[in-house]
Image (tube, rainbow, N blue to C red; front, side):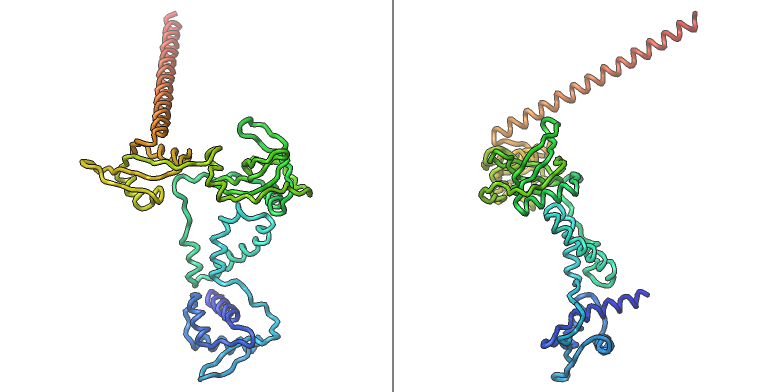
Length: 364
């Protein structure tokens, strides 16, 4: 059964490789193209396939220089523009990355293509590209949180409003107040960041761009009214100016620190920035780090997360902020330890009281 299936797939692929008149392709070229697609058969097998297929399909051949060349007749009724293995592989790997970026209408159109790609690769066991999908994964650096769940209806309404520049009425759950509020939005862009996708929009009556997490949007309605006309939002410029990190444009600062051998090795392979230097410290296996980095919370959090593997000397505001964080952590753990000690003493006191009560009862 497996051999019959492979033969059928090979012959279907062969049919797709044959051009339509007035163009021709030789048997030898077809054999090479089949080999590129993972079908390891000899030239005689390809020639037999072509002869068999010509009895059923509208194929025509001509001899040129001792070689047979093949073509589909102009009136062939078949649509042979089917999926190639490399196309199937690209769609298969792209699906998970595109689902939070493309409009819902486009996803609906691509859905059958994604399914077709998966099925095609599952069936094409002998093709090396089919195995690639099983052997390759994109794994993010660090702890990756599960994506926030976004309602299909919300994603559909948001993508349509953004695509067609229409107003969007939403109930939005505010993170700061934990209350829902009805808003009329004018969509301007969409950014997918880590596990959360954000709609960039202005609220009706205002011109400033704000961020709305898609998973906090509820009860959406895409209106027929056009969104207010503003200058096109340059997303790269918006991000570069600190759209996700601070209310003001992000400046660059000089990070000066000593780093452990493990971090030095990491940064030698994957630098923090294009302007970075690492110098060995005399009498130590640590290294001195200097790098031009953004003065934003994300970079500061990354440095703070290195813990005992880094000693920061500058910028001074970072040194002070790290000191405050460390002091806050120390106080929190000391307070928790004190509460645990008090709790344990209280439990011991209750046990002793209960034991004494039992002894009094027994003596009585």
